[in-house]
Length: 445
Ligand code: PEP
Ligand code: CO
Image 1 (tube, rainbow, N blue to C red):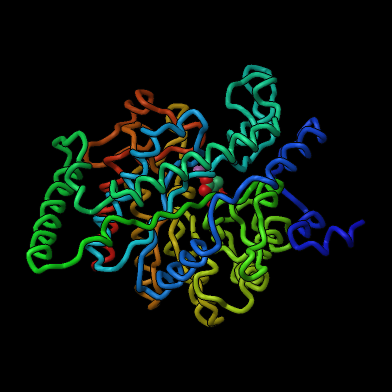
Image 2: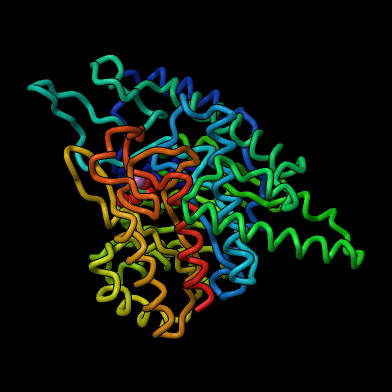
């Protein structure tokens, strides 16, 4: 039986240890859902995935910059038109800032349309003497602290698929239907306030407007501006779901994961001998791997031997999440080793996950610490002559109070007023714009 399974490249992961998988009480119900999912249409298409991989390669070479952002954990309840639009708009606004300042194309990737599963450090959560399974994301169970809600329900995998589909539909409509046209930039300036980040954005928008008028007067054809490429990515955590959406491309017979354009493997599941790496080694998508402060060069090489042995540009991104206090000390060793190896990587910084603290019972992060890790990332790459290829941040388009700081600061005492995330704290709309201006000045330096 093992051999039959391992001969099908979509199923080979079953022979490897699989961490962080839900314990479904009803195996039959799970199989029925998976059989259904296997028949559903793909959410993304091979040509789009290839295009993103080429662009990721360009970012690795310094010819483009990657902006990846979105919720830590998307929820079904917040996959509404308004939430999706505000998030996408925030990313597009950040991208304009980065494009204008950096003078290179910005590759826009949402942690959206599929970011519904979370790895957890503990399988169980205890409250007042009651122990229940941890919340693992809306594609597994519900956040509510009851036995029923916390029991993994396979029907939620279908929920993840349909919510991803409707989110994709909206993203495609916005980005291909003219809504995201650069010329609409002024209309996006929502809730203009005295916040310095908004002020700066308004000024930049005016400059762009001016440049566009000039180009129009010169007779430049603007049709291309109506269309924006906007890609999706999520952590490929739930192996059954990801395998069910792995499909053969009829043009080439190659396998693609069609649940998102790009997939990443988390810090907890990136064992080169584990099932997650095995599954993604079989597909053609661009792959990210999270790299924490304890990673050694050998770990990266073992991953590369599986995921990108031939050294295809754009295939593999290393998403470092070391913590602001570690990055300047720990990153150089990895960068030096990788440089000597010669295979291409796209380096991205995730300045969120190494900088989480608890304050007054809230899981939070400080804006300044987040920014400090980004600065450290740029410093290390500049010093070693390598390319800081992009940033990966947790953000929302809403005015939440989850991250402390920013120029219209969220104070420690404000955390409770709009703390809405179910897992990790996100930059709010203003903090996101401000981060974009800060990164823009680093790109320019
Ligand atoms: C995440 O990106 O939400 C996450 C859990 O990251 P990491 O695997 O780096 O901890
Ligand atoms: Co997170």
